[in-house]
Image: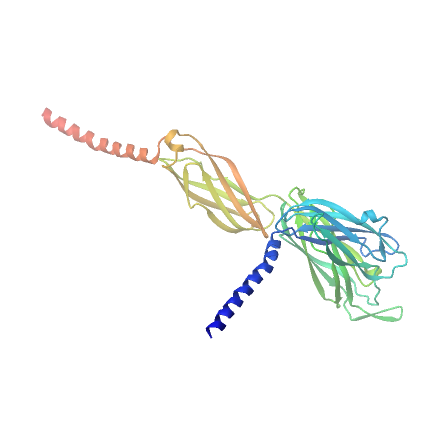
Length: 415
């Protein structure tokens, strides 16, 4: 019996050792470069028979390590072709973790191609010595024609956040509605159903500084008379994007070419933020004071989780941070902090004078955390530290007591 137990334990630890050996490469791969490839734009969409097609291909390094020398290769098959085999591969170079790069490829669609969906392979590798990784994508050629006569219209646009700041990420959600009011319609003596078919929908930026990180929607199915469907796209505003109105184009492929449409989708970008303004003089008396600020939301939409934090060298503030919470556009809060000299600081053991003071505002615009500093504030301070002031106050009190006493003693002796 003991022999069986010993053999069982030995076998168990042997299995653990084997598992750890085989698991180690996988764990090592977690920190390696890992490339994700996406077709972010197909122009024209759908691809036209007998014409050239532009593919905008994005590569993102979703791994933990830098990719030293990234290559993208496209493997076209009929009905797609390239002018030259040298155009099948493009080099991106180094790609750090979390970064993306985009390349364009030009394909020709054979003049004898049939309408429908065809596939194409795209390969990527992180370096010359790395293996190729391959992914297959579907490309739509032409538009299938249906006898349905439903018409799709743009019913609503919702941006989250409502107004973006430079560098923000968020979503744009569009609501498409079938405007038909009856189940059938008669045209030229023939009856047709009024279902609307959304074969594809793609959101394309029309100006610099904004990006769409989601691939197009395909085969959204039927939308009955009076019904609607919501499509959500992830978008990003670059840090250097200009302020104002940016525009997207929503291209919708409907029942047939006659029912295809393009809609303009606006996106607002505004960098206005939280303003912090002193509402009373910033001046200490006897080493302490209460500082007061007006906090205003100058952004066009609500900001959330607003908090204010003051800071000055050698000064302690209570509370250390003031949490306001949500603030509506143009909403104003007045907040107060108790401030006192930090006697342990070298700042007040040497000399006195105005101290530079910063007030930092933190807040959320949608899912994006922001911070801005209201600087160039001066906090006027006393020439004495709190301990010195206390000593002077005590001495003054003693003098006030002893002077009358001395005067009484003097009068008594004189009499």
